[in-house]
Image (cartoon, rainbow, N blue to C red):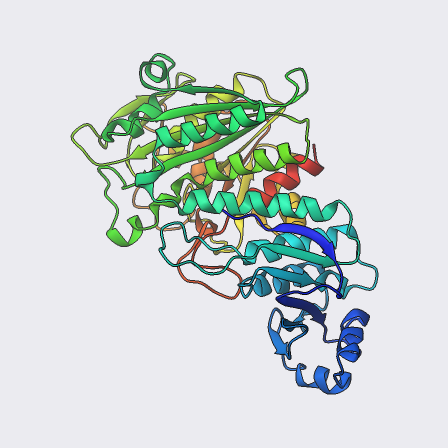
Length: 480
């Protein structure tokens, strides 16, 4: 992944593309845009009138400046006006159009007195919009190499670059085919990252998992030639209060003996998005110099179909001693998370957040992940962090009245409930997971519906979105 260089620049330098904002206000454009138009010999009002029909995020080209392109971008929504969120939207849409090396940006100057957070948001969004996954293509688009910002912008520009880089790295991992990112390969990646950054790292596999009571992880991986791995990463001061992160890492999910349809299986390389988000967020916090004490547990397995696959009706025993009746081998994510949550809570963290492509049945659509937990303050912190970061989530209830659906007549619990008429699978998944955290403050992020776009649109290329990465970074950086 090529990471563009972020700098402060001026209009006197030569650029391939210059980005300038326009708005729906009577003035039509901030002062910097009017000045550039005037200095380049344009009739300012005529130019702005010609652009008055642009919608949020749309842009128009004007004649070249020094051999480059002047692109004016609409940064204001008719419905909401000029907001930080509309600037994010416009910047990401504009980033989708960037296909040349040197770009000068003035979008952050749409506000009369822009705060550093505006520069950070614009930088993040431009770089996220400019992302492409072309690792396996023989012909690649020209890449964005340098992104310069008009006027001094402060340290938040660097922070924006770090956050976007982490988000795009998460997308790289999620976009990688399951055959190239097996549990062992994820473990090697985590070990290499830990070695580079001085983190503590432990990888458990084989007999260690069986002897350790990780029956859910072993059971899910039983049908694959690529055995499961439990990866434990730790950063920061061991004497400081501990925050625990848990990621679901099903590197490919065929459904096992509850085999998925081909249409549903095509995107199952994305089932490790929880692990990717946790790992990416940790690297971003490290790059920012965070001293926060974090322990991450990454539960990685491949759910495949074979003669050794776990069967419906089998009973698995977890790290905390509880047993689960397997109703559906395709409800496997909660089985590996049960072990990981049990394990990490043994270390008595102050709080634990798990991230998982668990159900896709949140009823919140493709833009908003779900947050559910046993601690209202923590859940609200997670949702607020997502709102700040432009990576939104919404709280769903941990509804006690549905608890009977996860009870089993032959085991302590069961991993699915069949024949339910109403779609509340996200809540049932959270009710199942709650049994493995005890009294530890816990929040669960169900991100399945938001991790992947089947088709490109004005904001996203086809593929992974990096969802929840920015939310985690915001939570840990700003809420400590």
